[in-house]
Image 1 (cartoon, rainbow, N blue to C red):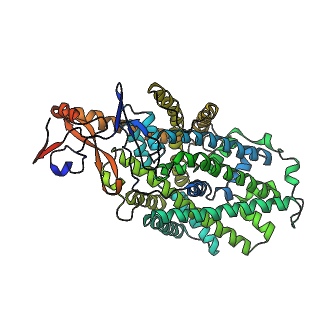
Image 2 (spheres, rainbow, N blue to C red):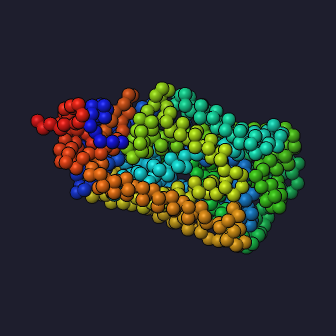
Image 3 (cartoon, helix red, strand yellow):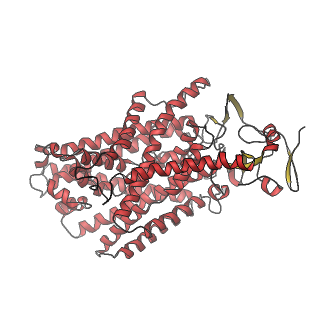
Amino acid sequence: MGFIRSKEDADEIVTSDASSNEIDQGSLHYTAEGGENSNRLTIQEASGAPVEQHSPLGYSVGPVTVVFLNLSMMIGTGVFSTPSAILEGTGSFGLSLIYWAIGFFMAYSTLSVYLEFAAYFPSRSGSEVVYLEQSFPRPRYLFPTVFAVQSVLFSFSSSNAIVLAEYLFALGGSTPTSMQEKGVAVAAYTVAVLVVIFHTKGSLMLSNIIGAIKLVTLIFIGITGLVVLGGNTSVKNPTLNFKNAFSGSSEATVYGATNALIDIVFSYSGYTNAFNVVNEVKNPIKTLRWSAPLSLAVTATLYILANIAYFSVATKEEIIASDQVVASIFFEKVFGAGGAASALNFLICLSAFGNLISVLIGQSRVLRECGRQGVLPWTNFWTSTKPFGTPLGPYVLKWALTIVMILAPPAGDAFNFIVDLSIYPSNIFLFILTIGLLITRQRRKRLNLEPAEFRCWDVAVGFSLLSNVFMLAMPWYPPSTGADGGDVSFWYATYCVTGLAIIGACVVYYYIWVWLLPKWRKYELRQTIIHGENGITAHRLVKVPLDSIEDWDAEHDASGRLRQTTQIEEGEVELKRD
């Protein structure tokens, strides 16, 4: 980003009159633009990234892909491993199943919030990037800057890659060293990145195929569990755990029960993945309003059936002792050891690999949208789809950061701390986002805009708000074993404080970049709209000297489009009036 002084600096700036409609409301200015994916206009505050009328990533996301993008991100390795920790935290089978149901309602309420936002901005991908940007357009660029920096810093998937490596070694029947495990994790993640880099439609098809295999696997586990409960297998007394299902609930601690619910909510994370690709969906709200809730409802049902299946074959003590391999107990007791364990490990490996792909697809769109806002340097790096028609820059960044996070942190405290740290800021933004929906509703009402295709129930908004407050507050509750009794050997809430500190540092950086430096160097930031091949459209922030501000504002509309032609001379941009 720099002063516009030459033709080279300005050769990508649009030089035609703005074609969008403008709505002024005091200090806020709105544009109304349409994308090819929807017959509804996207009416948004002009400081936000412009609508890409034609998606450079195509329109390959249909209802089936929406379902599997969400389902594949939700179903990773959690349902095969976390039930033991959740049972230990809740103290009983009955309470753990109730917690899984509560987690579903928490997730569904937030999903409804996303659906309403998508109805307001049907031609914008990136979900939270867009919704925060439009809910809080002032101070200008604050939320885009803070969220963009957070997204870049935490755009790694090291934990999922390492879990995949662990199961690959288990599939081979060997015990790796730490470096061997990290090496396989690096190789596995590299393969996943290569898969998505070369072809958008192909990567979506692969995600669908792996998602379908995950779905069939969980359906098989659920049906098998029901067969076991019917007494048609060699498992003895399969209904024992359900005769006194809530026995032990009173032994659960607040810390344990809280962590159990947090684990469950984390197991559902991914239910909004399809909202990252909204501009690639034809008639997005018509598609998302049934396919996105369906993916969550199916996943929740299968999660509960899988837990019932586990509880039908193993005792409470066996499940808690199983730690990360509760599903293997189920397979061994029903089908015997040997081939069954290998089959399970293969399915878990496939599930983990599919999770990597679905996360890459969704998060690449988030990073690309951050780049389109203009608040990150090197706009072309983030927005370009050359040479394969895919967001190569975001993929490369995610690969690089993931490799670093696989190789750098040692196992144990450092690894657990980084995983927890990556989760807490996202909960903060979800809380702010829910408040943002209420603000957006009021703002649109003042503008007398037509109702959106979807409106979230007020009770769902309220429940989402309470759920996010819970997710922010309860991690501060101390464990019963003392301040150092969490999943790290130091103070249990260190990751909460660090997450808040990082967000605070981003805010300080914003004020230095947007206010202090411009005041000191006597310029102001202004946005321009740039165009690239295949429909690429983005904002670029430029530094305009104070003595040129009046001319600049006269020649550009609020979104950054030129109102009149610009005569470019060597060494400067001279604004001419007709």
